[in-house]
Length: 292
Ligand code: SAM
Image 1 (tube, rainbow, N blue to C red):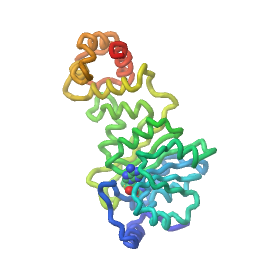
Image 2: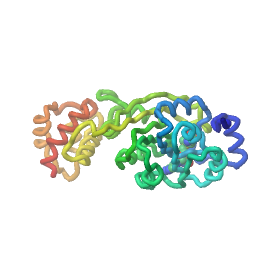
Image 3: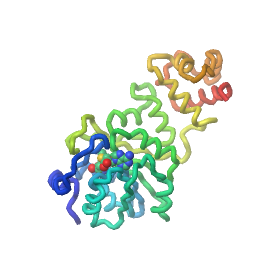
């Protein structure tokens, strides 16, 4: 087997050979611990028939582990300077394709259709650039990709919010948006010492397993998400106060909101952070007729 990329010595050698300098603005913190990488791959449950999609391969530390454990890897990398490095480090692996593109601008569905023809099990696995973790995850979910799930490293603080349960201080509109589409679990907390350069914040790995159908059925998805966002706008305010002040153009009158809360069986003095996904669904369905 080829020598692992993700050791401190090999990584330093590669970076020095190419005179590579890290760009903080691109969230470049590379992993130098093979054990952590192997665990990430295990959490993803890859088989020889899985197609893996990676975001930000860096110098190929995770890509190499994915290549060894899956049928094929397609990785999106924004930084052109990494392309010649990846061509060298990943040369032993014939099942890897690097796409030089900003993943936020890529047509991932099209890439999947072109690159993973015939593969029914697809997973996104990545050590995400921390400046764009939420937009990347939301985009992957909203695009309705034909994937089984997502296993990603990200800031622990964001992982806490994504996997939070109602009634906790981390629970908010991000928890709801992601738990609407997936079952979210934090599977590992990771120390700063396994990265070069070391990030300023703690990290964690989350696993998002896509639901066959969203957890709740709502009349109008964008309206449901609008209501959840408005409900958390000012955390110390009650639900009724947030909804009255946050919705645009005073479209919803206070008495209409009170009426909808009453029909949905929700006490108006509660705060957004205490409502379950099911309660938010009932509330947004009751409010929708007043809004449309
Ligand atoms: N996978 C490598 C590892 O674990 O060592 C590198 C991970 S590093 C945290 C994030 C990587 O994402 C960097 O290689 C960076 O250049 C790349 N990146 C940043 N923004 C990106 C974007 N919008 N689209 C694709 N790649 C991006």
